[in-house]
Amino acid sequence: MVTEKQIEQAVVREVKKMGGLAVKFVSPSLNGVPDRIILLPKCKIAFAEIKAPGKKMRPLQLKRKQTFENLGFHVYCIDNLEMIGGILHEIQST
Image (cartoon, rainbow, N blue to C red; front, side, top):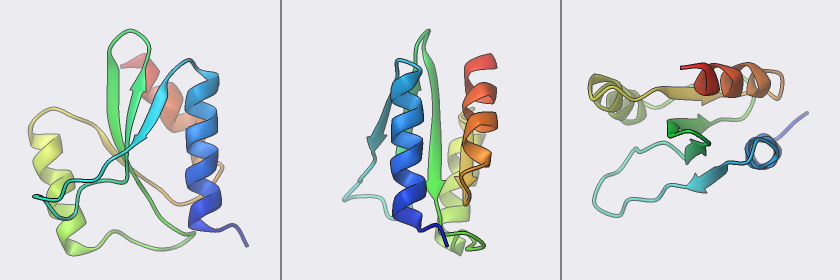
C-alpha cells in the first residue's frame, strides 16, 4: 500500500522534473491550508492537498479549498500516484 508520504515525495519529484517547485505550505495563522504550493514554469501555480489512498479532505480543508478557488486558484486533492501526471499536465495547460 502506498503511503501519503510516498505520494507527496512523488509529487515533489515530478514537479522538479518539470522545472518547478512543490513547496511545503505551512501557515501558522490559517489552519487547513493545502500541503503543497505547486509552482511551474511560465507563472503556473496551484495548490495540492496530499492524502493517503482513499482518505478525504477534512471539512476545514474543504472550506480552505473553496476559499482559494473563489480567488481563482486551483486546488487538487491527490490520493494516488496515478493522478499526479494528469494533474501536473492540467496545471501546466491552464
